Length: 117
Length: 109
Image (cartoon, rainbow over all chains, first blue to last red; front, side):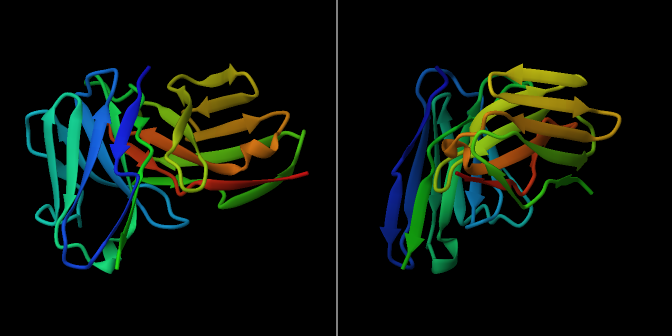
């Protein structure tokens, strides 16, 4: 159980276009979903935390108008990278957690590798 | 500030034992996680410690000392597939995960 899927797994786009990444919890209801970015040979960097039905909480330095997050249901969150540029090329990973307590494990999606040309 | 320290890289031999250390300074503590991450893949959960002591799970064990702000992950009977990065993460007072930079473990035959 506790499977999280992400789609697409890999995307290449031209500079200036927008890309949407979906994160789904397949067999549980995720009250909280997290979006991370990881550059090569670096650790995970939390971008934002989203709770179903409310606005996402963005980490300092993350532009909320550029990285649009929608957590429309307990099983789906989307991250849209608007007007993507080459520096946005990265590995984007979502995770999902059920319940309100932080000691609940985060279940990670397989990640989406974004390449912006 | 909040800080998680772990070695950048370690090398070990197949069949041997390796210990990966993690020290932390965080605002509050609600548990410590270890995750394994293979290159190009998402992290997978290995262990969770919230009380002092050793938690054993097969070939992997994790230890925690809250008074020292210290944890380690012990991997026994190393296999080539254990070559990966190992991430230490602490849940702080707001239940937010603070991540270490990860330890790249290289297993040699």
